[in-house]
Amino acid sequence: MTVTKAIKVFIADDHAIVREGLKQILADTKDIIVAGEAENGLDAIRSTRKSGCHVLLLDISMPDRSGIEVLKQIKKESPGIAVLMLSMHREDQYAIRSLKAGASGYLNKQSAPAELVNAIRQVAAGKKYITAELAQELANHFDDAQETPPHELLSDREYQTLTMIASGKTVSDIANELTLSVKTISMYRSRLLLKMKLHNNAELTHYAIKNQLVE
Image (cartoon, rainbow, N blue to C red):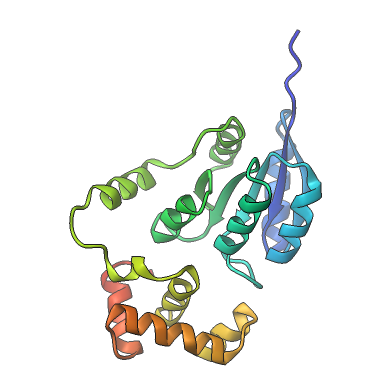
């Protein structure tokens, strides 16, 4: 009789209630075990190194650094770990950026428990996991023969700054949330306005809403 090796999963999310919910879901599966957890990006990078996990469930919105940054660092250090990005955002530019950065899949936190378990098994087997909605987004993204939209030329931090400003947050708010200086966020804002040929926050917000970058 063949003994199936358990899939070791590491959970990185800054909300304790989310981590507990994920652990509870996975506790009901025989072939998946939780190898550890982290509440911020730096802790996730440090702990993943020694966890021996096969799959990392990574929240895209971490308090100290973006999930994309954490993803890139982990894939650089441990390319064999399959990273499944979790987000409250709909399948949009964050999903595309995640997959480009090396993620094995992207899943909305509101997905059904069975879908989460299926996604973990799929990425652990070396496959990609995307929803039907995301598949359509990707098809539109790569089949579009038009010029690349300005927001796709932004760095991950610039894009994050764009969406946060468009959501109504001030430079100070963003600096506090990302644990960065106001000067640094102001620099990101200046760069993204220049790259996108926009002049102020009002134009930036209009662009983000028009292109469905914020809800």
